[in-house]
Image (cartoon, rainbow, N blue to C red; front, side, top):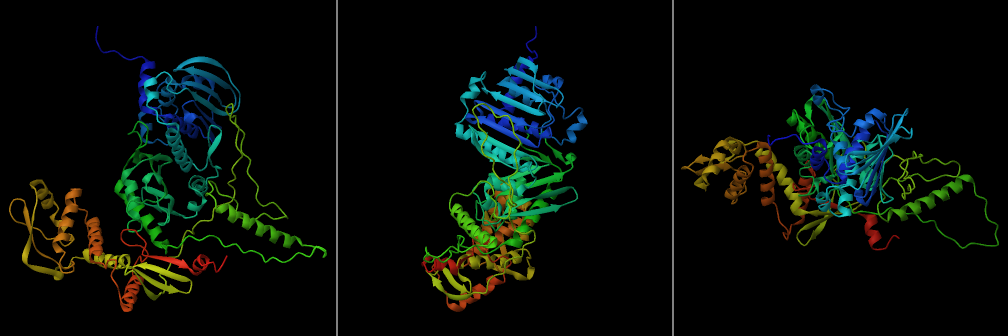
Length: 628
């Protein structure tokens, strides 16, 4: 008898579960994606103990009849694809038919589904049917996963803490809500609501529900188009940053994916606008022909391959950069909203109270509402947007939208609904670029910061960052136009020695190095000499600059002329700029500000740090208690 044999279906499903079902968030992902593919407009997710005890997903989608329900938990059972050709035009989130079979094999599953004509109730344990009977006729599907990994204790042993597992599920639901703003999502954990969206198709409402109204108001809409792709989405102003790339959400034909090169294109679009290791909040939607994307390259479908990728990356970078360039502005001190307090006077109790008109009463209510709004704004940022218009006595102009009733698990009370009615006021689609203010120099602090003033307050200017921006734009233009007539011949050539493999890389990229002003000549087997360099290289730092440029080529193993020129300009501008504790005359400070005014982007240095900060007159008066 041969040693090789075919595994039975139950064992193969448990093995497949090792790829598909990593943690409770994996189960939620597969079930919610099935609900989305079923055409649901409302999806509710209930968790107990981060999903390790129970996961319940309720939707109002198309549901299944009895025949489909009985085969749905079989391996490779799917309604999404039927032939090989369908693999190249996938528009659904799921298509392999492995999810339910894998999940059922490592849990106790309850499936209640109906297509509106007949209902089915199934209970499965470890992938085997325990109960089968008719179910209710509510159209949609209600699926509960209990005791996940009950029959695979080794997998259960390596689960993280409840907080960690819950964090993965919250992050997943946030992405699914951003990718499907037309669906109303709810996520509850142990009876506490963690997410709710209204399903009206407004991406900004979803962004407000996830990141807060304050951040949503500082996001800009963008869109672009090429021959093969359409892109759209929202990005934050450069002043709103995060320490991680996890706040970038990428969607390809509605599917949330991770794509390193697309993230890099977004970061490159913010080049010189963000500090090092800081990243924006982004929701990017990419639409293209399914033939251009391959989603069948990852077990969890988190990654995709894109055809005509360079064209798409260029479109993303240029579209976002153009949007940022149009709205860059001076950073300001955070200021609280000023509340106008009405003057008080002694009440005459012997005098009859005046009769107030309806208009007067509305004005009083509006003032009271404004005060209450400001008091509430001093607490934590709200998770969802609140109505910003004051209520009136004449009519109630803001009414909540009723939420569809769903069957909640035992012991979980549906929370009060969160109101997402009023639209969020955001930046205009075509904002005007803020002009550089006309400043009058007042003085200098510690030989580092220039103090200047104008009618609306005063400004602190970082003199090093200011000159760095000026020099950067000068060197960027010079490096991009290496002129043979601007070369400086050296009396004693500079010699550079490298290992054999490094010398090979330099020989292959010699033309790219010449494009940025580095002219290498071979001098032995693994040595090079430089006999001339551009005359605008900073004096006394020529060898260090050339070594840095060569090091960039050796690090990347190739030379991108555009990026090499950019790096060279940044490096030379930093080395050549005035440093801290360098005192300037008033004439020098005036000249510096005039040169800064003529820069393309005078508000940030090449490293993304602010050049100047605005302190308004009101803020100064507030600090000295001149206004209360």
